[in-house]
Amino acid sequence: MTTQEAIVTRHSVRQYIEKPIEAEKIEELRALIEECNREGGTHLQLVTDEPKAFAGGMAKYGKFSSISNYIAVVGKKGDDTLLGYYGEKVVIRAQMIGLNTCWVGLSFSKQPDSYQVLDGEKLFCVISLGYGANQGVQHKLKPVENFAEANGAMPEWFRQGVEAAILAPTAVNQQKFKFVLRDGNRVEAKAKFSLIGYAQLDLGIAKYHFEVGAGKENFEWA
Image 1 (cartoon, rainbow, N blue to C red):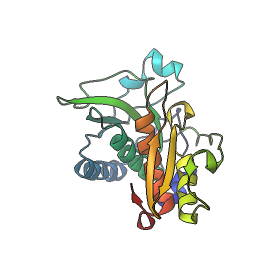
Image 2: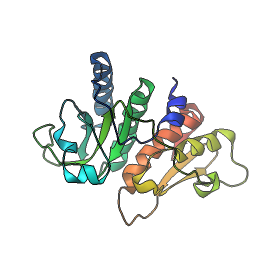
Image 3: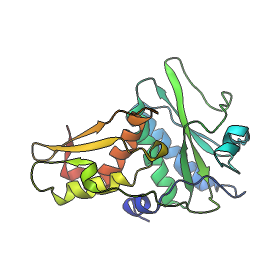
């Protein structure tokens, strides 16, 4: 499965089956997380065999079940966009190796002994990880024009980037982002105001999708 195929097939999954993740897949994800942390200055952490985070009432209310593996999305305060970008990079790799995921903002119980949060950092959210009881469903897609701004006709690479971004998971499917084409091949990614928060984190997720769809060789971030 290619990265672009994984973006299309990935859907948020809340129910999982009791099947351990193979050691080689755990190691592949740990290596990618280490690479992301070095590159982005983030502090993502893979937590395995830890069922307590999704054992409480909040998880049941959110219809989460049988989760004992997750990614702790930890980073410096204000690094929301970076964490969204690198977290989604790991999510897409997980999809490519046959695993399912879901970004989880509130429906879990914090387990501070299971991951490290340093001074100046915070736990933004977690990402559930495992073998899904289903493959999830596609959220309703809105027109490209709702998320894109360009003078004149959109180049095909730009349209493909926005189409990939529309597939990105966002908090309650709010999709509070826009991509603006400036000066030929310069692209500005903008977060819109959100009453429920997470807009900057969502923007990072959408930016990763845009890069995959558009091709990093075709543009530069403004």
